[in-house]
Length: 418
Ligand code: AMP
Ligand code: GLY
Image (cartoon, rainbow, N blue to C red; front, side):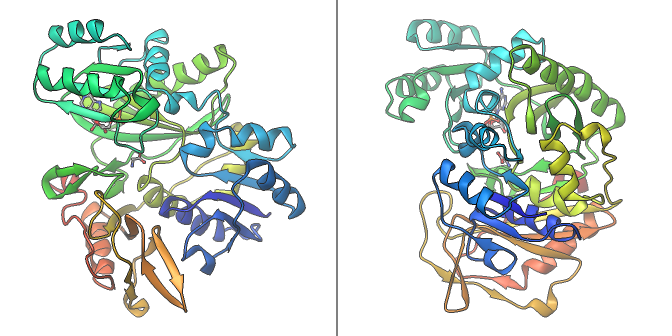
């Protein structure tokens, strides 16, 4: 089987690593990939979706896997399907679950899926009245995609009103902020649960925990994610069952009802309060860095999982995971997440990398050397028999892959080790 992976991050890199374990996977291509994916696959430089579909046909691609949200929201899956290609990812219509927070919140309400109390509106008076009715803090969200930056937790009502006004004016997030969601603040702990879906059937993966803030003790600015681990002990069978019954099942049937059956990865961002799951958000793709720690835990075939997911055959699949824990520690560049940083060379002592591996994201290759050129540069993944062992292995690997200005958290998985 030949596979095309759309994307350029460590998430997509980790999918390729999992596919490479499969004997039935022959060639892997990335569009566009990064400076390290050339070592495990071929990079192709085509952006237009129609041209990519043409490439897939000409190169006998049997399966295309779409990593990031933007091409999904822009309809890449619909174009590939129209060309008769097998593609794993959500349709343009179904991708509204991530592309529009107003759509997502209304969907949750219509399908009686527990979530934070909210309104969505473009009317400043209506917004201000709702803000006045809530207690502090207050969550303000831009409707559209904002690369993870569109959520503000306001500490005062004045701040919530100011932020809403800025969003509506288009100053903060352009058109993405022309509609805002005001939400009550939920106080619990967060979990990421992923379900691989084929429109009818689904497979739930072991729950993971991300670390969104830049600094230790969940301090500093929000980022795309500075590290993750799975499976987390913060979930038991009862909670899994509640998430399946109250979130996954109604989402699958709700999407069927509106003629947008959900295919691809349903990423459920949850807040857990007193062992009850509240859905904060949906994404229509794997989390990054959650994917990087889930892929190495997959015992059964990755190509079969994605292929069956893309061809409505998940009911035939028996998905298995290793009885291990994976912890991933992200290394980001000096000025992340504020601005881009000067390129700096990455040094790796390959002989010392054991009990895990590295997945690469913001890297460029030049004259045989690897340079850190992106925000999140790479992630060190440790595998072990316990959270502690996996974490020690991840931090051990981190000693042997270094670059100037690197930023990393020293407390990934702290909630599981307390
Ligand atoms: P979202 O993109 O909606 O997941 O929001 C990003 C982050 O903001 C989440 O991962 C939470 O940490 C936080 N957040 C969003 N909504 C709420 C809420 N209603 N209550 C508390 N925290 C929230
Ligand atoms: N790790 C969170 C995300 O991918 O959105």
